[in-house]
Image 1 (cartoon, rainbow, N blue to C red):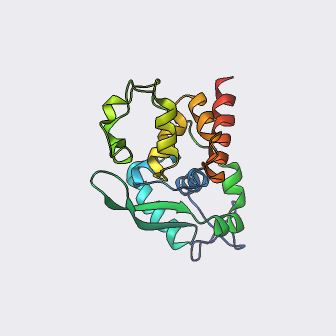
Image 2 (cartoon, rainbow, N blue to C red; image 1 turned 120 degrees about the horizontal axis):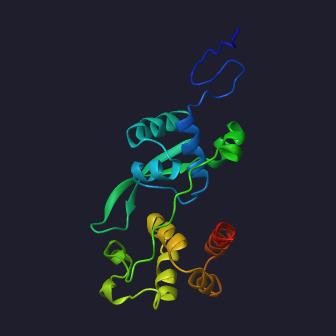
Image 3 (cartoon, one colour; image 1 turned 180 degrees about the vertical axis):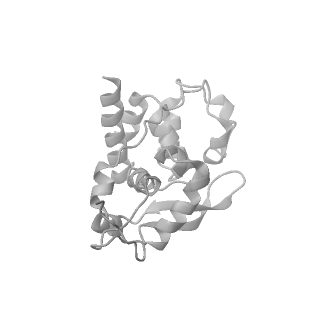
Length: 196
């Protein structure tokens, strides 16, 4: 006879949270992106979930107190407010540590590096024409400008698209904050492990 599970307020009998597979993958994806993700479509790509089911899953995870979804000013053209989805680290590691540790995520291959800086990053280079920044020639400059900006989607692009040497250059600069150095260091370890 199979084990019967009764869900009350999102919990299985015995007190453990009853989470669907998409919800588990979303939690795992957000745990690997401390700056958060927006919009919900970006969460779907990172988690490998269906786009139509991602937003309802995110909303349920907010209700459970495992995820936050707060509107924030996003530095994009035009500047706008977007809901940025983040893991509530303390709550998630307290309630579902095994989900964060053991949930496997799809490998999302980085896009190939373009010949010049895409126009969508123009808000970070307000003083000039982004098409002038040819890659990889200006990769060090582009990496520094993006990685020190705090713009979450731009940071992710730079970490996984620009050359490792450009990231190392940014990490070695004295004005770069410690959290940015650690983010670069962790990314370099991951990228080099994949390329071996």
